[in-house]
Length: 369
Image (cartoon, rainbow, N blue to C red; front, side, top):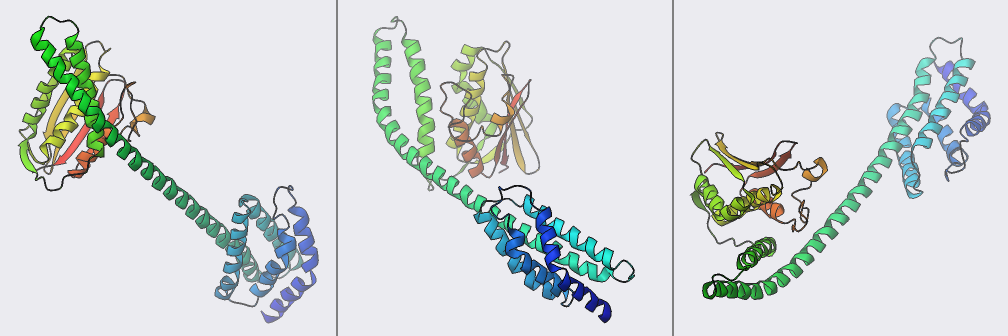
């Protein structure tokens, strides 16, 4: 084996320049790669690795190859150059050298083990370079995503502060207007349009409540209570009855169990109002509008499905429907579902949406008491 090794080393010493020239010639693809002089700049180093691979162990070679490959990866990332052309060039070099060696030593039967060492240099070099390049790129993407997320949260915080201040100022005159409408109704019961004015004021108050729920701090000293979810649903339906009647929605209830949950009752009530109110709203122009409410349980959870036969929500919108300011309504705030999802998650549950051509279903899963 020693004579063969010496022959291979001699061959590599004698054929260095022809190999590098052939490698450079066959890797000229275009002039866009600013590291197109890879063979000119680093060919000597690579060839030195190939030479040493005949002498050193695989582990010793890896210690030489890894830092050099990572440097190349960093250089290409700085130059904002991809790895495709680079991989192509390395494989060309591997093909040229292996072909030359096989032709020169074609009559030697046990040559392949040394050929494996040559291939190991090229393969490990590619592995370390591409892996490190990918790691750097992933880190850059992660840092950008963190920056975007941080900036987005800061803007939402500022917007929430501004909105909260505005809404509080807006609610005061709204309360006065609502009071005077009630006064006019009592003094002039036949005065036209009062019902319309009152209804629009209720809609406005509902929208304002969404902003306030989003902006106010959670009151942690309020204790959770146990309450009947069945009764709370019926209470919400009674509250929304004028709107349900106006749209002529058929409510189909299917309570499979009498269920008690433990949580913040007012917050859960607001979630139910948000979802059912939205369902009624999308059914305004639907023939035979229906809302189905089904209440069931597993061994550990309460499952509440609120379905409507309104228009299908597009797949792209379903994925983002719980994000703030995302809405399908022309005059919607896009906060109701965002607030609702946060509320359910604070109770240890989940709120999801599925939509097809027949039904749109919002599913609430909460832990049993």
